Structure formats: structure tokens, C-alpha cells
Length: 120
Image 1 (cartoon, rainbow, N blue to C red):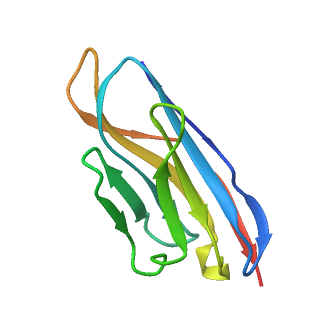
Image 2: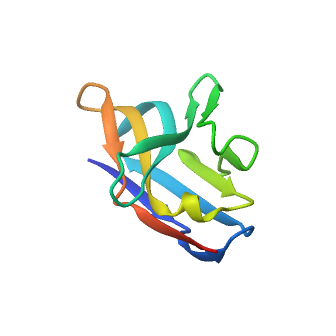
Image 3: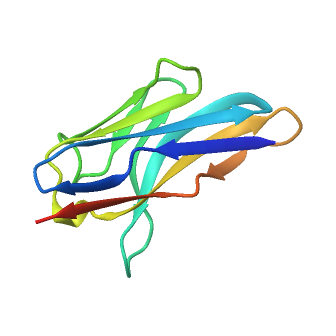
């Protein structure tokens, strides 16, 4: 069994910062990629940032230069530092991990989501 634990959402004023964390644990053989998606009300879920096992980081255009995705000090943990937040960043943020469990094939796992609200 695999668990994803997210933390760090909340309410912040425009221009402020928040940091999200995601920790994967359980029967994990290997991790191919970890990242964050977000879904704003009435919109489709979109990829925000993603870090692959070979160190390649992808950022969605609207967050590049403001958000930084990095590995945490604890194994299988990532941080998303969000600076210069804008009201349009308001969304539920979901951790996504593509991994191979000890007893199965590789697949995507999702966190429950954490709400980020940016006030103007």
C-alpha cells in the first residue's frame, strides 16, 4: 500500500508565499516522477510542476520563475515553494507520484489535495 501525505495549503495575500510538501511512503520499489497538479473551480486539472527521477524539472508557463519544486531532505518527499502568488493561483493542489510499488506495475498515485487561496 502507498500513501501520499500533503501539507502546506492555506490563505495568503497576493504577492505572498506558501510552501507545499508531499511525502510518499509505503511499499514503494521506485519513483519515476513526483509533482503537483492544481484544479481551480470550473477548470480542468493542470500540471504545475514535475520532477523526474533523472533530475529534470518541468514548470507550467504561468508559474515558471515564481514556483520552485525541489526534493525534500526526507526520502520520497518534495517541496513546492510558491512565491509572488496571484489570485489566479487559487486552486486545490494535488500531489502526484508516478511510482512502481513492491507488488505491482508502475502507476500514478494522487494525494487528497490541499487548498491554496490567494486574496487580492
